Length: 224
Image (cartoon, rainbow, N blue to C red; front, side, top):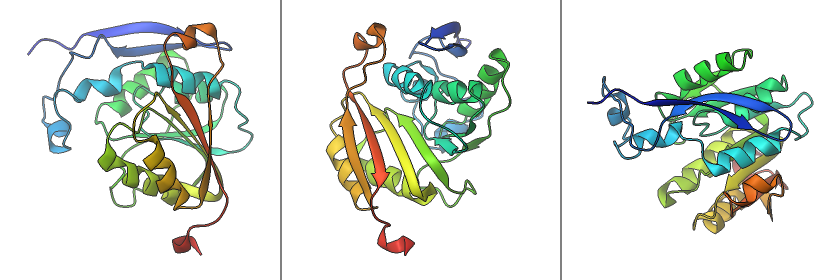
């Protein structure tokens, strides 16, 4: 097996530059202990967590100016954690999660590259038992709607970890399951507003999807 090839780069956003260590490309793979295989992560899917995607850049850009106040914030499917790094730079109360066993170690390195405070990280899948995360005021994620079988578990995961008053921001590059996800979120009491991001000309060339913003309009029956 070839050594893992890495890339060090600076992501230039409107308000801040974020330094990241990512995988060199989508051909990288390293699962020496077989942990990813045990979690059902194939060799083809293994590198996807470690690439800087256009959707993650859009989410990170949005988080440079999103109102955070004293909110407790959760990034779902964080990958290398670009949006979490932006929020950490803003001294937000941010927690990151991902199913991939290498997401946590990569996030820790990237926090250090940006001289930030440690970001709490929990490795968890959307169908896992209670992982002790608690509930949040703001839940964010990017490019999460890539597989139909994950839509209902993702919506249920968000519901479990959303406070009664909660905002959810999902950046989607145009996956076919957007409608199904919006309906699944509606079953948990969330209304959706779809919009097109307008941050920076460099993003227009890379991203042609939408930002899905959910707010709770009623509490799901299992929360009463």
